[in-house]
Length: 496
Image (cartoon, rainbow, N blue to C red; front, top):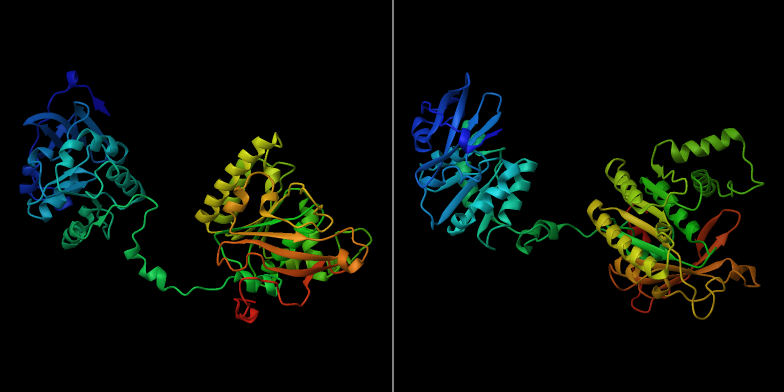
């Protein structure tokens, strides 16, 4: 609550020690911090001055409710006690902490606080920026809770580069440390305050522990050559697969999903936007029993079928999106975040990204895919998940994909953003019209982009589809890789 200047009368009280806060009488007198009665309530009074003139008073009752009396945009609390152009200035979040820090260092160094808490911190710094900038070094010592640290970063960004530092405390605020008998740690925090770096900037001299961590291989794929070529499945990556219509993109991803579920015991999220969840569930069950339960004519005893169902799904590790035809990208983003944060899912399959566009003109689709890929890449890094993503292809100038035509990155629908933002771009190539049945069921798996190591780009290996088992099996052969010789054994891969 605030009172305008015309209605404001000074509140007079007594200056004495605040024993419950560990603040002595000398400190309270220096800052003119008083105990008074205001409208029948006992209040603490913090007085704000400018050029020796009282410009405002902040009243605090026992319930921590505050009333401001006086002018708008006051100076910082305690600002009148210190000359400008000093060596070091400490800025605290509140008056009690300000007096605490000053008392701990025998009132030798300038300490001030903001008038109106975290919410008004940025404005308070802006209003007094010239005075603050006159100091060689400014240390922000705000509360260690989230609002306090967020406010400190917003305030510090207003100051000249290199001037500001942020103090880190082992407890919530300086007064807690004083009351705990740990005053020296406040002094240590001031002198050990770290240089401010804007969000997203990291100094390499603080990365040694991270650098020392062993570089682990990722989870194995169902096919040894793909595991060897990519060093396995890692989180924080987008893996995009493209192929012509009916060439097995969804089948390929379902087998990877099944492998993560059964071999690695991982939670998986399945967002297959062009089929029902029942069909997806039956497809995974088909992989479990090596027969196509999702196709007509294949029956199984109900008891056995229930056993298979429970074996795959009873542990709650499979999550699906009941989309009912909805392909709104904002909704998909919410589902991805929910799967990661609330369900603990690290491996999510999206079939397909081009379904998320509105289906308008080609130029509009490109812009939409640009935006979608940019946001997906940011989300994947933030949540540290793996996003397996299917993309449709454009019609090639020569040779249909469905007749074995070669896939290139430029053929992925929309703009080049799919290729730019994906960590891996992969493709399936197969002549589904071939006269020879072996050829008709055999696909070339091609790696078009390898951001991780760069050595798998251009590599290929063969996969054969079995109608009975509904699985893709690698044809044992050395994968074609023009850049390196594969030496690692798949047995080296985690959980393989």
